[in-house]
Image 1 (tube, rainbow, N blue to C red):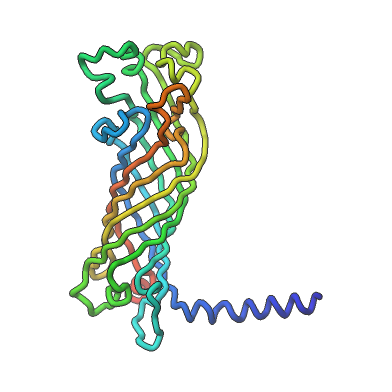
Image 2: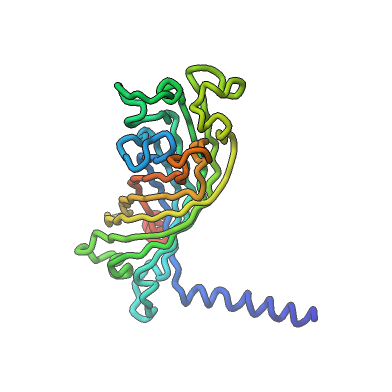
Length: 267
């Protein structure tokens, strides 16, 4: 049994380099940043202007391509390697100015809980780890050729999943809601979830790369759907208007370096 196990291990160890060499994997690293627009219970449902756009996101990204950085017609290729990249990301979002907006808190509103809504102030921040599969409309190996100056744009779409660790906070200008819940609107008086939490989310993106001499610029627009309504700390089971999960839109710009090309030039 021990001999068979060792033999199996040796076969795996010797075959892995050949398998990866056949795939011709290449690695890229980058950083992106931009504004985050959150759609939470602080904004009016289906009314994007009432969302709070004063938040920000920052991400470190890694791309795995399934072809080598150096073009070689003998390598062979597949449709998958020509059009897909696997993206891994660690990102950080924060919003320090969550507040109710929209018609229910507008001047002239006759809402009976107008004062309580206007007094609520929220914060949230999250550390996110996830992956996404990107589909590029153009042939990636052609786009990556150093002597190809005609195809500088490489548009793509993607879908992915993330694990989110978030930490919402809540205060009220009317007083301490933890000792006097009546300073909050009735539907949230016992439906507040603050402190460290976690969950998963789904991402859908569209964007493009733009090739420069030493790196790529990346422009990306992401819609992110959380599988929870507690990202902002509010999740009322008493009101139908609060039954929707939280979402966000993340617009980012960044730079990405191909490590093989970068290393060959500078090392």
